[in-house]
Image (cartoon, rainbow, N blue to C red):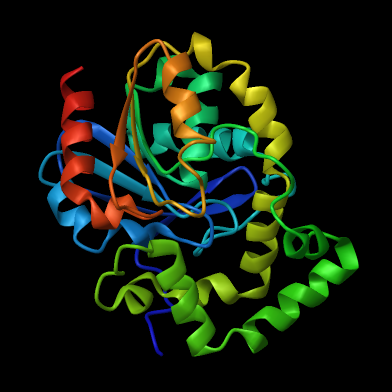
Length: 282
């Protein structure tokens, strides 16, 4: 299944990273951070046009995803946050609301913990926030080993059939249905490239130690935080993460989305827009 495999935005060099971004709209600043295996196009399937009527929206490909390059050590969500924060000045972005889905929500939390004076508020969608029992899985552990990981990343695009990619998309949305032409719009094939596979594996496999330390600091995060999480999320379980996060935040608000999976920024867009409006007025 073909897709547009060329960049859709512009580039900015920050340190050793060539950062791919898009900026559209007028109004207060909003920075949107995509999840693992995604890219900035995940926000451009009906959401972006509506967001751009109320906000100046800045979308980034996170390090190693989409068309952004990746420097060593960028599995660290704090380093990802610092890199993206450094891009704000040349882009003219000031005091944004951060909108983060899944791993992007974890990066948003790390950003706010490290530099709360640079953020107006957070909107977290299905975001990992707390340590989970066990590991993320043997495949990620093996795939993060130096030599075996290289083999896994080389083999993955050769083994990732159309059927497997489509089933993976259905699984992450379940019980919701993916938007029509979601795979083509996202260009899911971008996530099967060697460097991107290695980056995603490292991000996920190495996240837990950072989450453990971050969770100790949430009580000091005073800015407003809107949390949206589906009760049928099989990727980032509600009870392990957002149900534990909301009570410890001084100014947090949890909205549990019934019969919703891991992709509420698609399936529950009205709830997302309402949460962003509350942050706009905060």
